[in-house]
Image (cartoon, rainbow, N blue to C red; front, side, top):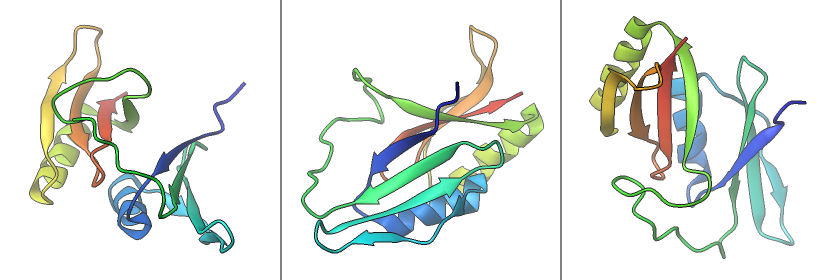
Length: 131
């Protein structure tokens, strides 16, 4: 069994598509639109076969949780394995230089992952790990 995809609501579909395409190699499909429901989405495909659906509808309220410094029940992060420790370090430098916060790391965690934690443009937590 495979996890088919994860979906994220966003207030800025194009900005989020650009982020995952630029920094994580996602390949977007053509934008889907349902004019009746005022719904738009992209499926972003990754080399591994995993997909991320990013969705917009004007009536979805913002998330009022503090995702940068607090944790909450429910899905809390997406994790991307990008290769070696050097590649993790380079990605942390790249994202920091682009203005994205590095919340933790790069470091080796207690369970053996080499990773850092950042936020995407919408404040969703992202872990970037080594193999």
